[in-house]
Structures are given as C-alpha cells and as structure tokens.
Image 1: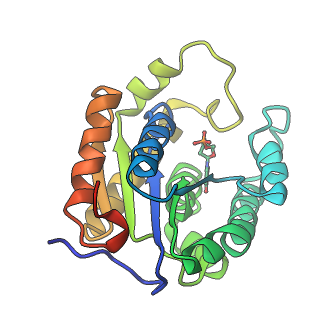
Image 2: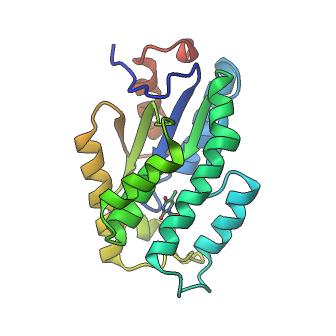
Length: 220
Ligand code: TMP
C-alpha cells in the first residue's frame, strides 16, 4: 500500500489538483466530489486563487485582462496572499475536523506559473509558499497532464483571462515546471492523463485513491 506524504498530521486529508489550462481538472473535481459524497461525508471543495471572500476579490484582480500592468512580483504576492487566507480560514479548520479537502490548484501552481512561467524561479516561490501554508502540505496532488497546445485548442474562442492570454512559450514553461515537480516528488504526485475522456480521468483518480491507506477513503 502506498503511503500518503502526510506532513500536516491532522485527521483530515488535503488533496490538490493541478494542471495546465484546459486540462479538465474542474470537471474531474466535481465528479470526484460527487463520488466521495455518495460513499461518505461530503468533501470540502475549494479553489485558488479564491475560496474565501478576501481570496475571491484577489482573484478578480489577478485574472483581470484589463490590468496588463500587473508585475510578476505583484502577481506572485497576490497568489500567496489568497493562499494564506484560504489556509487559515478554510483548510486548517476543515483538516482539524477530519474532513477531506479538495483544492483546485494550490501552492504548486505558483511554482509552475510564477516560478516557471514568469521565470521568477522556484526558490523565492518556495519561501513565500512556506510562509503562507506552513505545514498544510497536500497529502496527495493529482497532476492532470495535457500538452499545452492541446489545452489551448480546447479553450477555443471563449474569453481568456489575464493568464490564459499569455503566449505559447509561457504555457510551455508552466508545463515543464509541473512535470519537473512531479518527477522530483513521486510520493505526493499522481499523474492523470488529461488527453482522455472525463470518465477515464475519474477512474484513474479513483484507482489512485483506492490503493491509499486512509480511513476517510474506505468504501470508494
Ligand atoms: P483556474 O483557471 O484553474 O481557476 O486558475 C486561475 C489561473 O490562475 C490559472 O491561469 C492558473 C493561475 N494561477 C497562478 O498563476 N498561480 C497560482 O498560484 C494559482 C493558484 C493559479
């Protein structure tokens, strides 16, 4: 049985989902939450940036395409600010109550997007993440992997936010950074092939959860 990379030592379980744009992780999270709810107490589903009143306001600033002057340093600090609020207001209390918390993006996204995409480097991002989350490190992280060109094609013509508007080279760097993190942390990361159907992605996720030993996951 693979062990969880638990660092927080609380009774709950923190599961995060990451991936490049268009990887289908939000759909996957909804179907996983439905499945978990059918077998036990409903998980708490949240997202980043956002997830709190403060964080959702920060999200609006971060994603607004009418704010192109936002610097990469500002962007990183706002991502981390939203995270610090979410961790203390929502995530830690839920983990203390023994709940499953599912977060649509988390600290790794800053390493991929600001560290990799914006080329700020992993070091400064790691340091700020450590300040924001402390020991609230995910037990498991599902990385929905999809080549960036395919992700952009999936987005089609819909209105793009400030980050989605970045060029192909930026999204390639994000993708490479995610892959690098997964390779150097095999204990926490699980790869999901996001080029398949939503049903297969859910099955891949469930298979990974079923083989993990944790009271909250029995009956899946
Ligand atoms: P979403 O589209 O998955 O809701 O994510 C919002 C955007 O924010 C997405 O383009 C990824 C980006 N993002 C970062 O650049 N850094 C971060 O730390 C987080 C959490 C998200």
